[in-house]
Amino acid sequence: MHHQAVRVIFTSFHTAVAVALSVADCASAASVSITESTVPDDDGVMVTGVADITDAAELVHAAAVGLPPVLPGQKAGARDRGIPTVPEAGASAREWFDQQPWTAWTRATGDWAGMRTSIEEAGVKFSGSAVTEGSRVLRGSTASNSALRFLVDLNLALDLEMLAGLAGATVFLDFQTANGGDGANNGGFQTYSNIKIDGSITQISQLWYEQWFASRGLRLKAGKVDANSEFGAIAAAGGFINASAGFSPAIFALPTYPNPATSVNLFGYPTESVYIGAGIYDGASAVDGIPTGSRGPATFLSDDQSDDWFMIGEAGITLPEAGPLSSVRGAVGAWWHTGQFETFDGATANGTGGFYALAEARLWKPDGVKCENGCDRRGLWMFGQLGFANADVSTVAGQYAIGSSIVGTFAGRDDDTAGIYLSIVDFSNAPGAGFGSNECALEIYYDFVVTPSLHIKPDLQWFGNPSGGQSDNSLVATMRCTISF
Image (cartoon, rainbow, N blue to C red; front, side, top):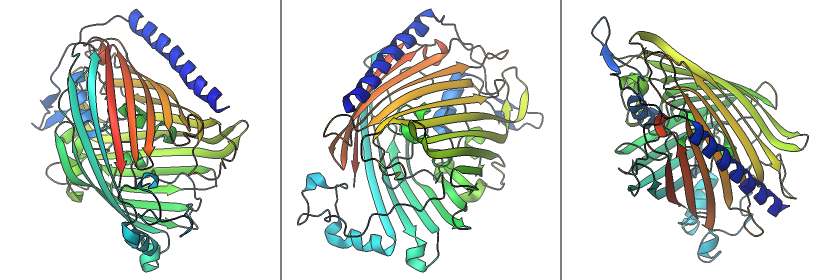
């Protein structure tokens, strides 16, 4: 059965490649007119919009690249009110030289001779990771173009119930330093690496307080938050590195890596299976060009630099079992940004928004996997996502994507993962937009678990009609190394 699941993925991959190549060959590439996107309004204030692919790409890198919340210590906001599963203290040998071989440690720095276990039992949990990767454009107008980049993430979670007796309370601090790596530009609109940014950052990316109320029926999170950890994320898509898999690029104003923002988020769980939540974020990055990732709450309410807000809501349902499926989740969401945006015809829009939908489910699971245990994600997964935005303002009028991933690929490789993902971006055809054909992005990866703390991931992505036909079809190869410490 395990081998059948693997064959399903690669058969699907072969079919998807054939379909995508057919779409690309039949599509006509059109030239794109470039228009100025920053103009003064009637009061002389500069108004920024998303009037062409060049400007949209700048916004994608500045405010909407998207890092799936899968780094050690990071996790998506809860989608149910269930009590978190906590391993029993002392249930396994400590990760130290006198207890286990280094190759069995889940963290490269181990247990710190027992100190790590002691502080975790007191309510303080430290996590760290380093992601490094090299990319090369194998085919396209920038073939042989290569780049190196890295992201180091250090975070600290404080369980205030253990530390101070405050039930259901957590404080989270996240530090990041990264270099986006110049080069390897394949001409695509969809970013082929979710850690790729323009330039570099060194910042406190997140600092928030979370509180559960009403017997875990209500959750409040306030502070500097990566919005993609609360909205638009798909757990089954967490292994892909194409940024669109993190969240739909139609949500172009989402305050996420490298620019999380000060926010207030409130989620309710009326039943065990239903959740609904909303958040209001500092919207200074998407329109005003202010890097909220390196700032505190100064521009959250209002100042002389920005008074824009980003608002988003999501409602969904989660089911442990649904017929032959397990771990099922479906969700819909909507967002609105209050800033002033230039439309493609040169007018000004007072605010813009859109909506999205997503679904994921486990199609097959090996014997012994318990659906109520969210920690065990072994099996074959399928997911899909949709996103739509105001075509008068947004480069992306719509996005349609489908993917499949498997956790546990072969006998004895229970922690390896592999996947295939296809995303199609429908560019705006509003008068004055001047975009060409739709862009297709196809990704396939395999994540080798060398040791529990060291992962090597070869990744291959093909782009059809990059940026609507501005560049030749391209093929990009990336080798990613992730170490947890």
